[in-house]
Length: 78
Image (cartoon, rainbow, N blue to C red; front, side):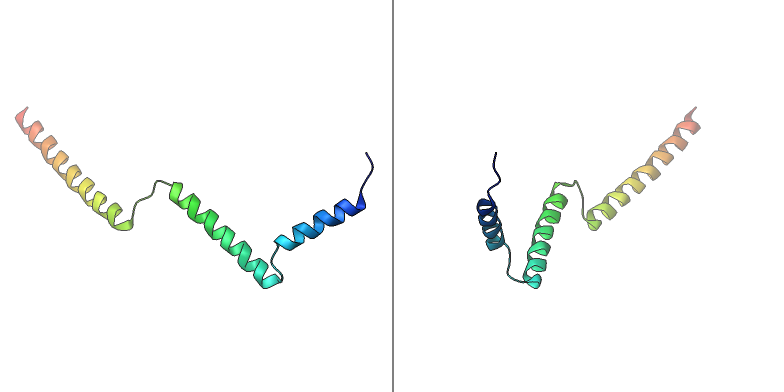
């Protein structure tokens, strides 16, 4: 297979046309792509809000206290 320099130059020119014109635009382009990727990754995670976490923590503490009370009462009944 023979190397075609003209085809290579044409491919490079087409690729360059797809890129932003200056460094600042390139940085913004990259930053935008990274933000989209990060948002996509975060949406896939199974996370809760801090408010929901604190609420569930309180429920767990009350449940634990109630369990301890029931355990003490059970010991008294023995």
